[in-house]
Image 1 (cartoon, helix red, strand yellow):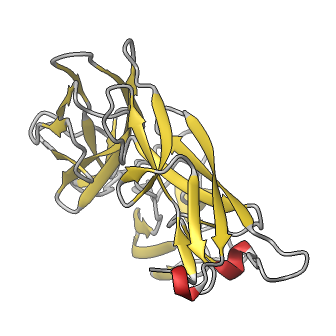
Image 2: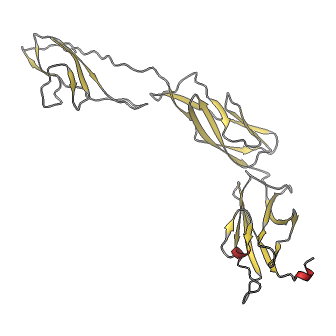
Image 3: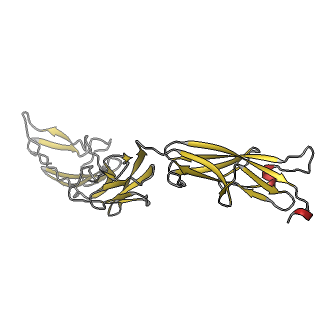
Length: 297
């Protein structure tokens, strides 16, 4: 700041405080440091923490003068603010999520792109991210340079996570895949030793401690369905016991054919949930048998 000493007398270098400041040094609590005080010339610095992508406006300082003569005078101010060179600071996909329909044959594509921005929030040119899938998804591939995503007709409905990386910066977006047209229909059946068992299981109460219920899902083509198309199968007994393994102990099923009045049967509901929202349920019956030792074999 430069002023005419014949027109103005310096009274206070910072009128933000009660004290009159007339010399170099840091002014407490206002973030200012007076670096130069010469007749007709004042220099100061301001310590302002401006968050990335933000701008600051307001009053930095208020210098107080006393007029020495009538009329007008000029005070010139030079701004020597130093602006840091832009550097890659954030990365994000242009959309937080994408969706695509799985084709009935062949393949389909979509392009998911990410932008790298500097500390001022400006999109940087020439900063090309590398694209990938967070986890392998059968029937889906991503071009690492362009972000072009290819979906084959063999892909199952569900969701995948797209990833874009630039240096240490990482962005993710969700890709949701849906079936259209010839959508799958499903069935749920129980199996024992790999064979359909018509919903009935048996347990020898005198020698066996647990039973394993095994439910499997098939699509309309007769193929067994697994993840990611099949999200889960949950087994729940009529006693309230619940798990995803299908194994239940005699105690969990509260079976006791020798008790009074005795319990010979338990019922277990298998609930299958699929990625397209389909939910199927089927009930299995577990019967406790008491086989005499002399006819067991």
